[in-house]
Length: 106
Image 1 (cartoon, helix red, strand yellow):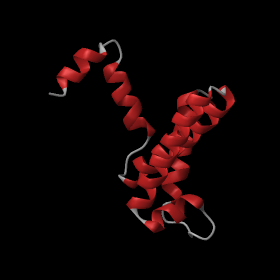
Image 2: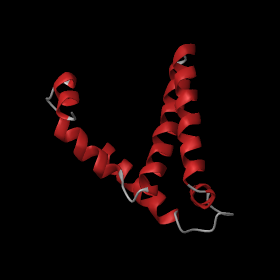
Image 3: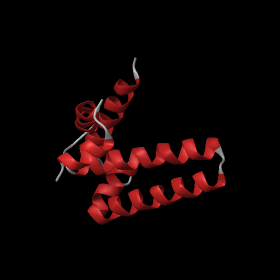
């Protein structure tokens, strides 16, 4: 199993839980609270990742980044998107300088 497959499986699990019982699923509880709750969790996890980086504890950075990625995947699922959509965009950008890629977005 490759790493992209792990992301795909997680994306499928998150998508499946969108309609689950909120009392038995963390993802379903976020969806039940609405988009603002999802956005708040992404912002919280991003802040925690930044703070972990400032502390310099590598394990803490990895764990907070995992939380951030998870909640970003919940956000993607909110919009009917998944990890393959992001992977396709990363493939499109591969080999393109960051400066040129930003210019292409106008």
